[in-house]
Amino acid sequence: MEQYRIPDAPVSMFYIHDFITEEEEQAILQSIPAKRWVSLSHRRLQAVPTRLTATNTLLASPLPTWLTVPIVSRFNELGIFEGAPHGVNHCLINEYLPGQGIMPHEDGGAYHPVVATVSFSGSLVLDVTEKGASIPRDGGADANQDGPKSWRILQEPRSLLVTVGAAYDDTLHGIADVTEDVDLNKHTVANWNLLGDTQSIEASQGRNERTTRISLTYRDVKKVSTIGSKLFGKAKG
Ligand SMILES: O=C(O)CCC(=O)C(=O)O
Image 1 (tube, rainbow, N blue to C red):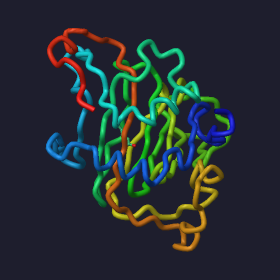
Image 2 (cartoon, rainbow, N blue to C red; image 1 turned 90 degrees about the vertical axis):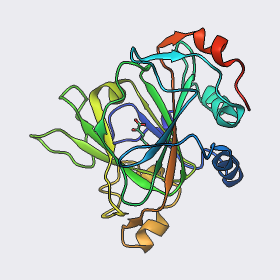
Image 3 (cartoon, helix red, strand yellow; image 1 turned 30 degrees about the vertical axis):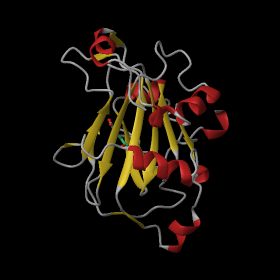
Image 4 (cartoon, protein in one colour; image 1 turned 135 degrees about the horizontal axis):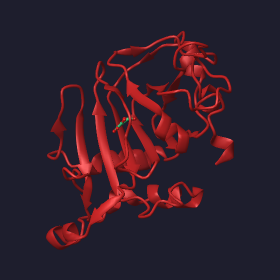
């Protein structure tokens, strides 16, 4: 994974462009159930297999095949969830229209500290901000001696972003509710050198006009109850 490490970001973020092919992207998009969306104020969401309980417990049920093939075997080849007690057992599907986003937040203690996000359709900027002073200060897109540091990570369609360890524990992440990301260049985008296509951004003077973007965030929920598999039986593919 070392070659995919985002150099100026918190020490433990990785970016791989073209993690899936266009054909795989289309097949997965077409498999997302149209009727399971939950509308929130600034995006819509599906939790697979289900939402966590009030005690952050997952009622265990296998993920459907369209979510795991080919993505989870590629995670395994890269060792992304090595050390996670259950491997991948949960996936959140988020959809953002232009002008939608998600408030800065942390994913918290319900999950093993590894998140793997695969992006679909549009590109957008994920804003990552230091929570405290515990991340090594080894440079960054927005270095600031006084306040918390922040980084802009451009997520292209078909890319994978992996957040582990200190980046998981010590930063907040959010997506601005704008219709366009601006001022994108090698100085402001932490993963610029890892992007698949910088030319089109340069050609549009550092602008990324938002279109609908879908993300799949794969995780390992720490607390699992097997009552779920008894209730729901085998997952549908
Ligand atoms: O869509 C994304 O890339 C981020 C999603 C996210 O932050 C979350 O589901 O907690």
